[in-house]
Length: 118
Image (cartoon, rainbow, N blue to C red; front, side):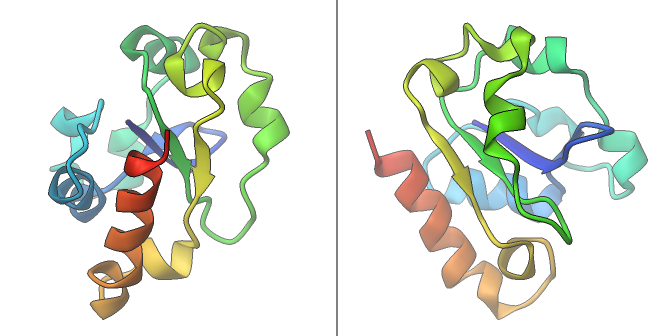
């Protein structure tokens, strides 16, 4: 699973998001970056996401809605199971990107739902 916190630059999820993915039964394909608290240290590339072949992509672009057309049009991602099976989701940034109880109620539930949906 790839959690996309931002589009340009391409930023993957922070520690607690990675932990929620695992708690929901998923595998964060950028789990090695989870300890990086600064977004600039969690920047990745389109090619690297494609290489890791996520089966699910969850976007939560802080302050703006996820542009699913942008996600679908990334050439480097065309071979990923996430795009091939249309497993693209959005979680409201107010639910998942801010520490608080919503992480454990709504955020976890939304990630579990994305993982369970086939």
